Amino acid sequence: MRLRHIQGAEETIATSPFVIQEPDQHRGRFHEVFGNDHPIRIEVGMGKGQFLMELAARHPEINFIGIERYSSVLLRAIQKREQLELSNIYFMCVDAKGLSEIFAPEEVERIYLNFSDPWPKDRHAKRRLTSPEFMKVYDQILKKDGTVEFKTDNQDLFTYSLESIPEAGWKIDAYTRDLHHSEMAEGNVMTEYEVKFSSMGNPICKLIASR
Image (tube, rainbow, N blue to C red; front, side, top):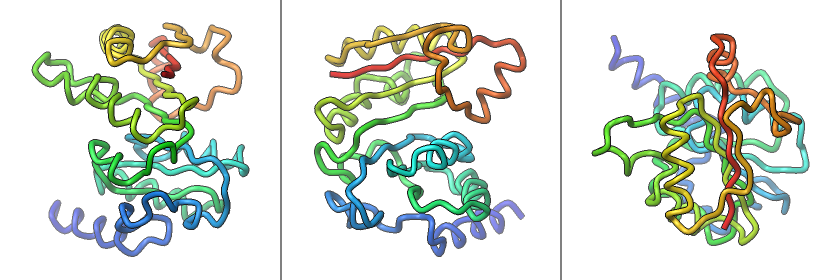
């Protein structure tokens, strides 16, 4: 039954008009996908897509691409997307490690990382989306004045990120360990996890990084 569900999700993804197929074929030409030259922002590990679809609705002058490696999760985002009249958002089912093969240098204006898997064991640190290894990938695709925005409720992962990002040669422009009670809360768009964890009383952490 589970195998059938996965196969069904993969078939939907492969035929959905909202999913960019063979995204590496569009490298350096994503403006053609959107039909305009608006800035491109991406979310790595977008989950069910609530955050990015809300941003797309608020900012028609910006193009958004949601990246999710798990087909069963991406399927839920596609189902939500089908209910919306938006022309500035697409999805990809790819692994973030290959982003530099998909996007050309300086093709992306901003990267969002929201409630990423903390990979708590030290031996898995390289898998964290704020590790120096991943920051090198972002460095290859972001515009020179581009930024990375990261949110989490995991205090240990946030502490790690405050250390690992500067180690990768980036600078922390702003950060807070209690987003919803800080100046950084202005204009904040909440993710599904953010709604859940904040309702449980967990403070939300956020940082903005640039080179």
